[in-house]
Length: 236
Image 1 (cartoon, rainbow, N blue to C red):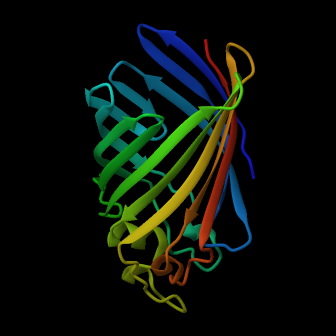
Image 2 (tube, rainbow, N blue to C red):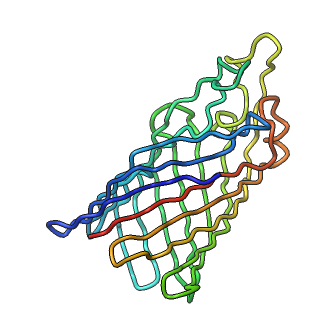
């Protein structure tokens, strides 16, 4: 399912501002036959060395023609809360705050991205490392398409928090299940269509492929998780 976002951009004092709303759709790994749709506000503030948006704060540490290194402070949003599924009400998940580093390397038409983050909010006490390679191309003068393939590594604390049942949460017919450190591959596509000098239509979709140690969890009902969005951006 697609989603819709409308965005307004403005520039002042060397900063770029973006505000708007997003409607997103995603499958829950805890339910086999349903998807969730949500409407969220969107904002971003971007300066010469930093960017603040819903993905967190990125501050540039060093930059060359082909390489960037940044500090990151990022929320881990709960896109699918198991407590919303009947029978799993005790598995409430909260938003975590993570900190770490991100790097980007450009070579030709391709960009490789790396990120390592550690929980600093005592929410899951885990760590995540992600790597992705992406490329983009123009289909027409108005339409551009980007493709990304990546993999995310979660340590056992974050993997269990995301997909398992901690010992303190077990009870009744729900047994504790620790998910070991996991590699989760993903592929994604995004597109941007320029309607006018100021207005663009944007969209994207992503599929995550859950490994066996994740799908072996008693609360996981899918082996793939798909999400999608569609949006509109206004820049001035």
